[in-house]
Length: 375
Image (cartoon, rainbow, N blue to C red; front, side, top):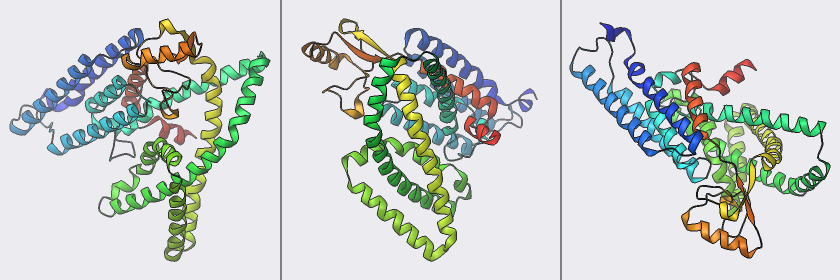
């Protein structure tokens, strides 16, 4: 039979993935909006296809050897729920718009699970998709930043560079101290995540290589930063966790435990050192190229402020303007004698999400793992 020689999930789902991806990417690029009708359309289509294939393979022989099991559907649902939760979390901390978060959820639902087969995230396959979305953005910004600073070396802007150097000098030591505090807390959290992973692996061996540590650090990074600012006790609790883990590990595992701890600690040190240098590198670039000044009369809902004010705390200093706060912000700016406010340039993130989907289909694993293998 024809159906026994093709993958029906690819046959039915990949066309809609590319259709929705192209349409939404185009609209987001031109208008800066992701319309809910395309998200709903893709979701209804996917549910209909999964339901049809399951019923036909379960109760008839029309599909030949093709069999869509309830276990597979359960994995799809589980993966989709985690993708929705991750998208909601990224929206909550202002890293994604609501439309981008829903688009990530839709692609996680529609993309067949076989495209994650070479990944190390069986508990959350679509985390690979998240990596493949972020890596091209990171590489693109890094290249732009490098080119920008090479131009500055050739044609320096002395006055602006001196002002920027003074700002960096003033802020560098507080940031180093904050990073050390964050390193301690992340290290303690990593120890706890490893313990949890080890426990899960006792009855689910694949969880040991499921990437839980990487996922945990990724999800906890921003919340732990906010937690440290609010509660100093977190630092002391983290030191207790680290010291007690070392003592207990040495008593039960000897030198081997210390070597494992040192490996974890050294990797985190490299991560934080890279984060600190790269963050400074990118901040100086983005502050000059990704921020524009918009006249007060031209401010619109959806724009994101790039400067602090009394209405947004540090956590929400890049919050979107909406119908409720727009008038209040304008009145405040006028009283302060401002004629305009600095906002971030509108970026079309849907294009990057769709590019991440294509990379996942082609590689069937994360771009990061490919780079590590080549390295």
